[in-house]
Length: 114
Image (tube, rainbow, N blue to C red; front, side, top):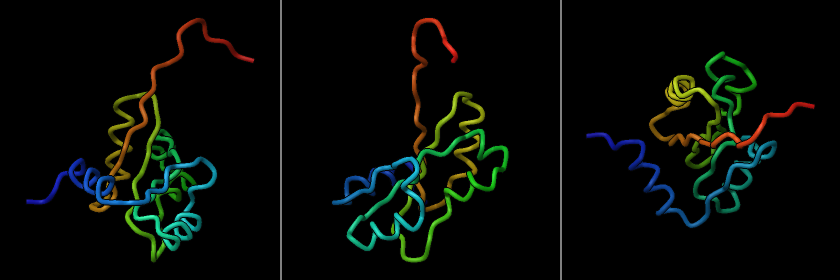
């Protein structure tokens, strides 16, 4: 029986000594490859827009692309709509890629715009 994504994620994080945390604007494939070469057992993409992924944005999909020589790669998604998040998780899923939704509570108080 194949392992569930959550089991694979748990194994990657508990079995890895060094994990590269997601960093917006930095965690692209070449940077992850360098970090893997210096000992990162597991890397995570920068935060990926669920909306952009579902709409088929080329740049957004490119954030999921790995390079030969990279170790295991996780994807971190962000968005506001649960259905969009679920669809994006399906699109980002791969047998060896755990996916983690980034969930936040909206700030309380009146919304402001500049």
